[in-house]
Structure formats: C-alpha cells, structure tokens
Image (cartoon, rainbow, N blue to C red; front, side, top):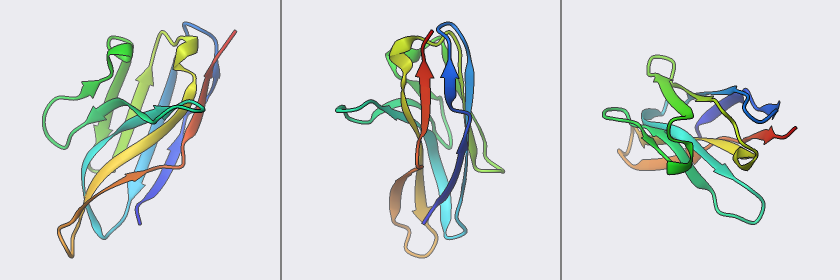
Amino acid sequence: QVQFVESGGGLVQPGGSLRLSCAASGSAFYFYDMGWYRQTPGNQRDLVALAPNAGNSNYADSVKGRFTISRDNFKNTVYLQMDSLKPEDTAVYYCYVKVRRRASGIFQDYWGQGTQVTVSS
C-alpha cells in the first residue's frame, strides 16, 4: 500500500488562499503521476490538477489561473496552491498517485484519505 500524509485543508474566506500538501511513500513502488481530485456530497470525484512525472501539468477548467500544482520528485510530495478561492471550491480534496509496482510492473492508482476545504464567509 501507498502511505499518504496530507495537510493544509481548512476554512477560508472567499478570495483567500490555501496550500495543500501530500507526501506519498511506499518502497514497493515507482511513482508516476501525482495530483489532486475533489468531491462534494452526492457527486463523483473530479480531477482538479495533475502533475505528470514528465510533461505539462493539467488543470480542470474551473481552477485554471487560480490553482497551481507542483511536486518534489525526490520527496514524492505534491502541492496545490489555491488562490482566489470561491465557495464552489468547497469539497474534500484527495491526493492522487499513479504508481508502478517494482516487482510486477503493474500500474495502480491510489488516493489519500482526503482533506476538507471550506470556502465561506
């Protein structure tokens, strides 16, 4: 299993900023894509931002220009800087990783336990 340590969620006023971080670990794996998804009650989990192991990052249209994803490959850590937050950004944010098992070569997807982000005045 991949282990996650997520932090940075909380309550913020509209227009404010938060920074999420997620450190992933697991000696049995090679780490590839890292990113963030979010989910609100009764809805599916949607991609917010993705930082591939190589290549350009991808963003949901709703967060382009406001959110910035970055990663530290040495630490297997991914960050999400969220600026100009809106009430509709309120959700549980889940860290995501795509890994390849060292032993079998099989690719797998894992999500962290989630962190609540609430944007409200």
